[in-house]
Image (tube, rainbow, N blue to C red):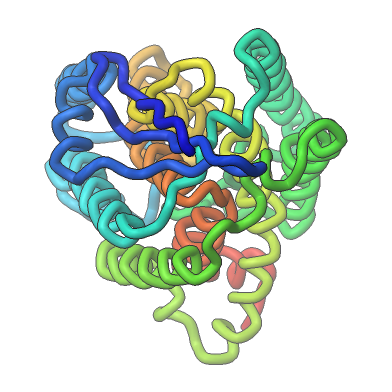
Amino acid sequence: MRVVESLRDGEGEPIMSVIHRPGPANVAAVSSLSSVLRAAARHRGVQSAVALWIVGSAVALWLARGSLPFDRPAVVHLPFALQMAAPTIGMIQIFVLMLLVFLLTRKRFIPDMADRAPERRIALRETALVLAYAALGQLGGWIVGPALGYRPFSFHIAGTVFGCSVMPSPAEIWIWALYNFLVFAVAPYLYFRRRYTSTELNLRSSDRRNDVLLIFVVMAIESAFELGALGNNILGLSPHQALMGAPLSFAIFFVGTVLPTMVLIYAILLPRYLKLTGSAASTVLLGGLTYAAMHIVEGWSAFDSPRDTVLSLLFVLFQYFGPGMFKSVLTLRTGNAWVHAIGYHAIAPHVVIDTPLVVKAFGIA
């Protein structure tokens, strides 16, 4: 005997059915692609996000007045129109990846992630505390970095993805990575691991074969896209530089941003978002917003004037909202936060694009 309950979005449209069977794990039988697309299109949060994206783009265009004030050497040579269009182009590519992930996971059972979170009252308290802790951790990075003579620490070191005019020193890179690792990965993990299992923290696979397939397919497509879109990539290095720099870049960013992102947002917060909202669409949106918020001060940001500040905050949202949503989709579809960490973060972009930064910062000839 089994009991079937429907998980619905904010409009009451079914997104998946949770099948309760005897035993420790519940799984979800996934609706068709067409029903998921209809549910997403009717979701008020999705509609609001689309409207705000359009309004934000219009505001950015009006404020920019033909140029952007950011320190982004990798894209500064591109026409202004292309720089403005790039976030929307990237979002379209992310939507294509989402559809691909849905198709690749359509035959697997989807773990019931909401069942991994505690009851609503505890989930709400834990969510509020984690978000407050994350904000304090960000504030600490903005204080610690300058206090040591470096730039403010965020989820990325200065120069990540887009390069920078002033290279970070090796000491700055290692201190940044250690700070993020201890504050956003180690401390939250130790606290929650004492109370929840690895499965409840989305850190154990329920379908290794499908997870591995997703990792390699997403990694291959995203790597190809980034190699074609950004010229400052690993292909511009000598064989020796690539051989020495790639493992170093992987280690630095894995410690400094991949693990902090995975633990704080996709292991801890995402199941609680789903528990509190009961909506996969809302959970994806919240995952995207949280990921963007953790990058609120980037190395390329400019805060010299109100105009520059607004543009910087808008482009942080444009840059990271989509990837944060896609990481949420990968985690919701697999119940395994390692899938996005390896397939859509550690290698692309942080080896494919950021190895040249590491090579230059560490003086690898």
